[in-house]
Amino acid sequence: MKLFLDTAEIDEIRTVARWGVLDGVTTNPTLFSKIKGKTYDEVLQEICTITSGPVSAEVVADELDGMLREGRHFAKLADNIVVKVPMSETGLEAISRFRAEGIKTNCTLIFTANQGLLAAKAGASLLSPFVGRLDDINEEGMTVIRELVEIVTIHDIETEVLTASVRHPRHVTEAALAGSHVATLPFKVFQQMVRHPLTDKGIVQFKKDWEAARAAMAANAKG
Ligand code: G3P
Image (tube, rainbow, N blue to C red; front, top):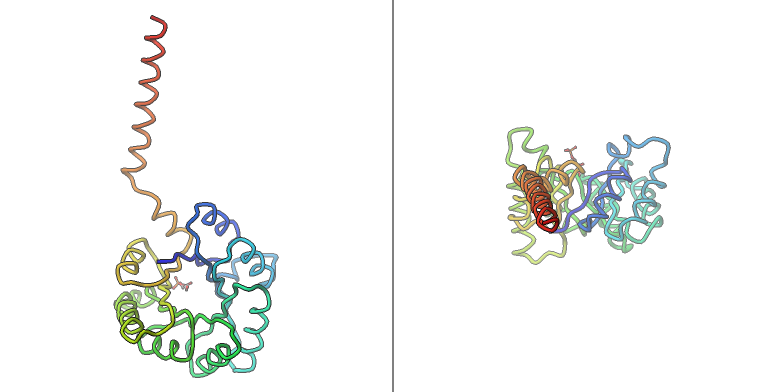
């Protein structure tokens, strides 16, 4: 499963890229609103210099011409830009038009397998069901991932299921087990995945034992 970072924070992206585990980045208007002093274009271009993986840039227009204008603009910023389009009747039309123009899209705000199926048929290269927001309203977000993965597999549809709105490491494990092609994670979840209290404890113990062994060797050498 590919791992994307769900952020517009450059430092976070550089950090995970250095770990060697970054496959791409997703942004949205909410994530961009946290960045000060840079335009969305500048942020996107900078991200594209850090990763050669897909970088999702979201349109905000709600009519077709605006979506197409914004998406075409983003697509010119870098080769690895993927235009993120919200699920709606107009969104589907935009996805289908972008596909005809060779512009890759990520259909966002998917909450049912049927919405995902429509987006895939319209030509979206990434389908983004939001698991956390479904869990928030007492639904089972991971069910949509399982259903959608099964649908695209059974029907051999050329698209990828991207698990979004990930809130904790367990979502990542479950998405991987469900066969999700991609999961996009907040930086905090990447950090949580790295850590385990027994790992931390083990590192401290190994260091302590190593120092003790070195001290004993030094004492022996002195005779
Ligand atoms: O990728 C979509 C994601 O940013 C939404 O996450 O936590 O706002 O539901 P959240």
